[in-house]
Each structure stands twice: as structure tokens, then as C-alpha cells.
Image (tube, helix red, strand yellow):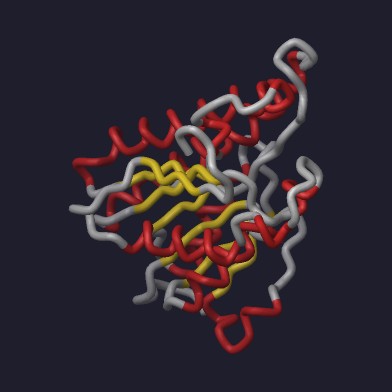
Length: 237
């Protein structure tokens, strides 16, 4: 399938597993077409009969030219882009004292710079849509510093939250809405390496996917700047 389609189209980075995979499956189920940014593109099993509306793109968030190429390829396939879901992210569990410049640079590169480039590459299309949507997968670590070892990660995720607000301001008059989605522990491979909390007591990726699908489907008059989700009681979140 090539050319302009009627379905809304979402680009999803980090779509090979975890949150990105679940978000893509949910959006396809709800009638979207999805373009999946993956380091090693493989058609997901859940695509099934909807594979005509699933586009695979080779994408590495560390490659500064990758976003523009991905958007061009998605436009060739579907003719439009209506949403960007910047999900790819990394976490290096070090305090701000233990971390080297290289650690901070690595997290800023993937968690902040790559989402900004992706939104920029798709910007004209998002504005043309009239209801373009940008979701930045931030974290509750972008709202507070929970532990010494999460400090460096928090630096990047505070920046990711600010990025979502900045995108919202840049595109509001053109119908672009941006949301920083800030989950706590989600039952993914990343979380499993950071906590002893059982997976069944974490936020489930399917639930997060339904929340993101709701956010990108809301009308322009129901803009949500931040959405915090937690699986445990904290003072504020």
C-alpha cells in the first residue's frame, strides 16, 4: 500500500518491544495506521490481517539523520503523519556524581534530542493534520528524583517533560498538542532490572497503551500537557 490513506498515522519509536510494541498494537486495533521505528525491523505477530497498515522502518535514536529518513519513508507508504510517539529511551542507573559526561550525553541523546528531531522531521505534516499529536514518553523520574541512582536519568527525563511542553507551545496555534506521559514502574524488561517489585504489581504496558491511545484521540479542546501514572503510593504521584 502506497499513497494517501484515510486512517490517521502514528510514528512510534522503540516499537520492537515493551511499551512501544503495546502502543502500536492498540492503535492498530483502534483503526490507526502505524509506522514502527525499530533497530531491526520485524513485522509483529499482532499485525495479522492489518499488516497493510503497519509500516516498518529501520531506526536508531543515536543516528542524527534517522528521523528525517523515517518520516520520508512513512509518507511514501501512507501519505500523512498525524502523531509521533517518542517512546525510545535508555536508563543508566548512576548518581549525578558517579556518572561521566558520556553517560549524561548518552541519555540526553536518546531521551531528549532524538524525540525533538522526530517531532521536527514530522512537523509540517503534524501541522497540516490540524490535530497533530506528540507523545513524549517521559517518566515520574521527570517529576521528582526518587533515589540517588535515578538522579542522572532524572536529569534527562526532566528535560523530556520540558520538551513536551515546548512542543505544545510551538504548535498549539496549528492544532498540534503534545503530552509528557510520566509513568512509574511499568512491567517491562527495563523495570525488571531496576526493582524487586513483582511485575503483576507494576503498571501494565497494555494499560499504558490504552491511555496513550486516548490522549492522541482527544480533540484539540481537551489538551493534556502531562499525564502521570503510578503503581504505588508516593507523596505526590
